[in-house]
Image (cartoon, rainbow, N blue to C red; front, side):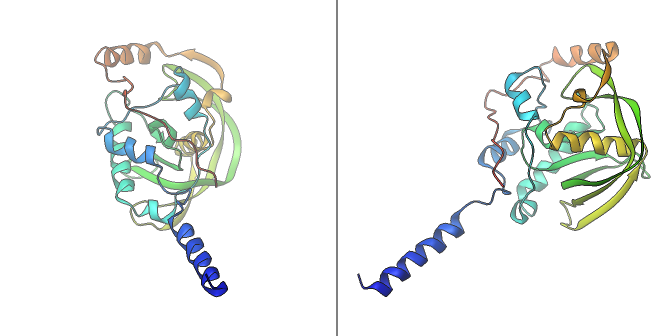
Length: 233
């Protein structure tokens, strides 16, 4: 082969490989499978399960532009909304690792807004913590049925992408909603509230409530579930 033709072939191959390489921010194959195979109420990992615990300790990374604009993103948001508001979960927030994903997204209830709507926050990051630190009681859907006193700041400044409009947004949040933001952001960093908590005790009412749903198999882990590994950035 003539030198210039050989060089041209090498360059073409390199371009082809570069174009076909997956972006770490794209949904992984396992994530797509979880989104597709899960019902409207997704399985929520718990720290008592060894495999679940490893997932919950995973530090999530940002989504790519492709993933943000994908159909999987819309379906994921819908199912996360359904899961956190389901009778067996009945929470105020839910993060990516709590549904088997390793990219940065959480949904939470904006108790500081009229109608207290649930909203989705993709590529969420807390930019700044505001005010004083105080202790307050917290629980977690992945650590049932325990509660503990956790130190949190009075407010936060959070940056994120709206997964529906794809807009870059920045918000200042205070009060109890700011506590929810800090709790969910911790999940995306692989941190569980019990890592920071004091005076951890069992919530007996929650324990009894979960027992009733557990007897119906509503917390059973799907046999097909295989968790993704966090992509390298």
